[in-house]
Image: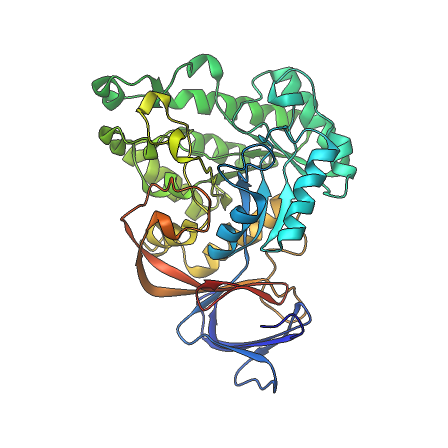
Length: 432
């Protein structure tokens, strides 16, 4: 579509998997929804057999810029996001320099706006330099042009209880949320994979479930004590799900996310010693996978967040102990969720829209994203072919990096088109 076109007619899409309908998009908004709409001169997207969802929103993306442009840039990362059906991502703070000032978060925000592939919402660091000693400029980042509302030292746990309390208290002033990387450092020094019988047999230092669960329990109590919002990043254990379920039963303002890889992959993959499967938190047991799926299905876990973590080849094609933690996730997330949740009957497409668009947007306070596909709402949407099957080829990713754990795996579903405020970013399966 040319920059001058203002109308798109999507024909025959199954909105949230329901009966087919047409959608007319005009001037960045949904103008009409119904059968057999007519719009002379509009760009027509034939969507017979396709499911229409609100544009996906990722709460947890590593775009690496500034500082590690050898792994990813804002432009390449957001191209991968658009290819995966995302219209908004939250860019984590562990860049170089760290996004702990208004200047750095504004830089990331402007790079996203210039690239134009999807909205980029910077996540501000909780502590200066991610060092866990002094609070970063939370208020200044919140008041900046980037309007930061999510703060996280992701990659590091805010392990000091006093600092965590102060951060929770501070963000209340502007309705912010602290997103915790739950990892008690004293219990995970040198950890390489999930602690259990397998880690002992493989000779790899174990990362025990309790290291995650202890921090989550502490922080739920702290959030309740100060009356603030807590978000738990990348939940990976059955015990964590139970703690969050308990906190929610108390009415506390606690939300949580799970990654696609923790919904599908288990620690048995570490037997290969292939560093593609090295991630933090580590892949867990089959029982943990079943528990996080159940938690996502019943709403205990609010959102799917990719934790898209690109790395250059040399940081992954090495021995396990020396390899970096992390996996790609943006352009495969929807397919993995279809495999783990839709095809197992745990979620329908309306549930997918809720967990991958609606709730993430509300948690991140992104008001014009994750909205229903209804008249007057922003025209952010993704069209997915649920009947398609595709084999994942690392070289086909829009990301600069190639560290996908799904290389050679056949997954269901394919993003056909992504539309950001009435403008296609993906059309007929190709990036625009």
